[in-house]
Amino acid sequence: MTQDNSNSLPLAGVRVVEFTHMVMGPTCGMILADLGAEVIKVEPPGGDKTRNLPGLGIGFFRAFNRNKKSVVLDITTDAGRAAAAELAGQSDILLENFRPGLMQKLGLDYATLSRDYPHLIYVSHKGFLPGPYEHRLALDEVVQMMGGLSYMTGPSGRPLRAGTSVNDIMGGMFGAIGVLAALRERDRTGKGQEIQSALFENCVFLASQHMQQYAMTGEPPPPMPSRVSAWSVYDVFTLAHDEQLFIGAVSDKQFVTLCRVLEHPELVDKPEYASNAARVAVRPQLLEELGAILRHHRSADLAPRLEAAGIPYAPIVRPDQLLDDPHLLASGGLVPMQADDGSTTPTVLLPLLMGGRRPGVRGPLPRAGEHNEEILARLGRHRRPGA
Image 1 (cartoon, rainbow, N blue to C red):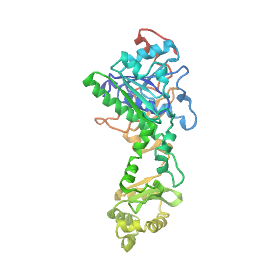
Image 2 (cartoon, rainbow, N blue to C red; image 1 turned 120 degrees about the vertical axis):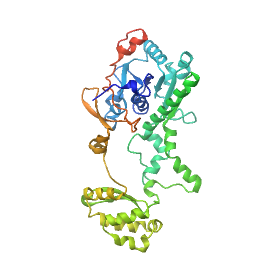
Image 3 (cartoon, rainbow, N blue to C red; image 1 turned 180 degrees about the vertical axis):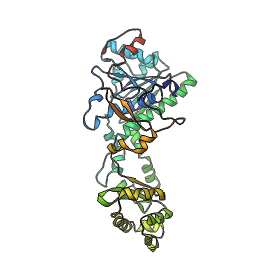
Image 4 (tube, one colour; image 1 turned 30 degrees about the vertical axis):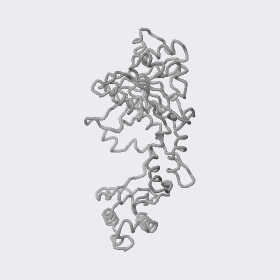
């Protein structure tokens, strides 16, 4: 189920100390860990509270903390802070995503640590980059609202957050990208640097195409559900038994093919459907006509015919259904992992291949403080959990 092949991975020999919780910082650490770095997660006495979140947060810890080691330290004490600082000095990279000012108050900020450890690459995951908003507390939902994403996602007048922690996850990704660039720069200069990745700026980056649309046209872009589609057939249709299927025909050739698959070639001969531009002009009429036809089709019968014909399509899939997705299972993107309670759980791997291989799971999810003895022995002292 697990295999430690970290020595053959690109970040083998790189050490990371991680002071993070929730999603953003842990995502950055997990990416680095999956790529072979030794990532030491520092947890408070009793363990990271993310381990025990209820509801929609229940999967956070298991999803974003694999391939790490866990050390419990009480960094509110002098001994704990001294151990944390020494651990940072033995590391290449430090990750943190605490509220603004906390690491400085603890003497674990970049300005303090870099005086003794100029090689250190220090990554802060924040709500905002420096500026008027930098002292605000932020959540993924907060920045989705103020960064244009919720407006573009929901129907007109009903802003809607995305259904997952898109900014937290992408913010962690940008933190990891900064680390990779800083490691390369350190190879030349011998010096580390501070990196900041922020939720708000991440969300604005996601909305940048719509900002550019306004800059070019002078027209505020409408929310995606209200958009004027560039293609006549590009929608979710209700099939027999109330199944739903997205179908996209984005060229004249695909439209002709779709009509053939649906066994309604007469649609092609209608003058108002002669070209994509003509069909877009009468799109409501066309969608109503196609909808009436598709009401008599079952997804299981129609989907393979669409695939064989090269028509883009997609069923509407819930996250729980992905646990049985044949492509994920066959391609190795969903693999078993031993959880911190000893059970086995499926985990989603990074969405990339490197040299034909998928960076995978190298060990069980760590228990809180599981690696205290191993890690703290390197500091020249053994400390009990919570020291």
